[in-house]
Length: 179
Length: 101
Image (cartoon, rainbow over all chains, first blue to last red; front, side):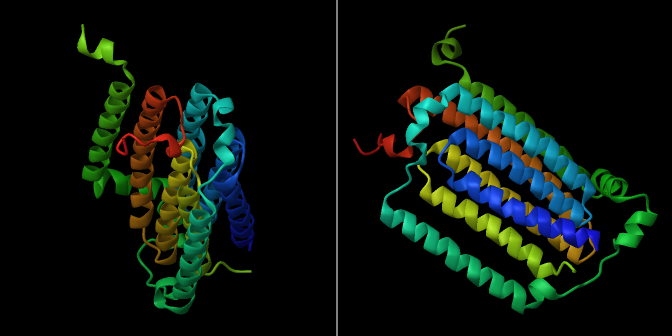
């Protein structure tokens, strides 16, 4: 099945790229690994039938958010971050990796062994039903503008507030107080 | 070859834990923010996986909202990083000791 092959391919590469992004030595390399990881996640979403979310993932994350990150890395200058690879002390590093690994093993055990990860309660939007109603994008958009209209509008308010907040944070002090 | 629901959840958990370990281990503020983005993406993947598992669209709708809020978070976070850098001339969490003195 093609979807399964795509899932395993993109999932494997996504894991590898996110590890490179999280633990790489070079900040610019980290940023570009993160772009590749976001593309792979979009592939995973598409393999799961969430086509609109996959496209938005590429637009918003691999596009907008990563441009912001690369931009800030360029403002600060990667030369000033030569110590970027330097992590915490050996104790904190060991404890952090150990905690993450233990939690991961625990989570996988829970997902494999219980109904959380294996049960299937079928809702109304099976793959065939979605295809008959005009595809994932159409069905999800209709839902967003009807049932989820209020959260949708609230999100726009959050985005405007965030934009104003970011601009206010970056205006130098003397310009802010005197007009 | 078939995708089992637990495999997708395990993938999301793996990505989340990579981000989690990264936030704990890294000292650079921008690298920590990138790891936070990874964790948000893992949560999103879990939502989409449950939407697929239960043939319900609510998970995908929530994933869209999480994406918008995460973008807002990244914008504000990076603005804070830039102003922190202006104040301290460094992006290293080891240098932030204002409360200590």
